[in-house]
Image 1 (cartoon, rainbow, N blue to C red):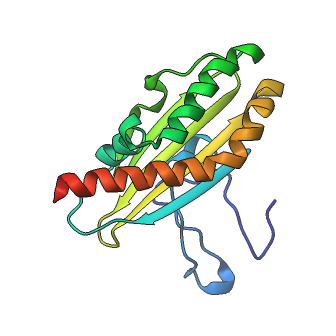
Image 2 (cartoon, rainbow, N blue to C red; image 1 turned 135 degrees about the vertical axis):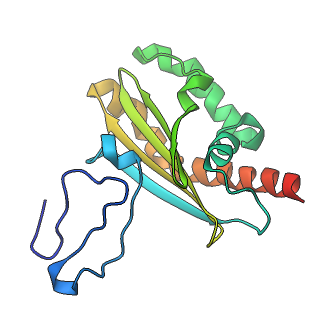
Amino acid sequence: MTTPDCPVPSVLQPGLRLQSAADGGTAPAFRSLVFVSIPAPDYADVIVLPVPAGCPADPRLWAEAVFSARSAPAWIRLLMGLRQAVVGVIGIHRATTAAFAVAEVLGEEALINTDDTHLDFRCGVAFDAGARLLRVTTAVRLKGWRGRLYFAPVRVLHPLVVHAMMAGAIRRLSRSAA
């Protein structure tokens, strides 16, 4: 929905800056590749964590580290194993590691995208070297009852899981940078 005070473009594109006539075009801008192909997600979140000085700045490296099993605590590996065991019951395919492969890197953001029968998933992993901030942006488009049923518990746990995986990647890459 668009209001005079809050214009919203139909598609957010990399480099697009949201501007309001009321503020003379000085509104803060938020961009992520995830919103190019899913401009109106059923679910979206953004998690940002500070990163110690000296860590690498390559967004592909950060994306690979965040989604590495080595960055995931045991409780997340257990949840992923449970997911793999249960999804077949409702007719959803088991995920492979390819589901989290980097599809492209543009500037400071690496994009992971996966489309399946129950949902479309986009994840942008960005590293702001100047501010030393790691940002993970997720956008999901649900498809049918299977997608809604599958995503009900994921919706609750997703921010906790992403935060823990990011923290694990930061610890891992901080140690390798030292």
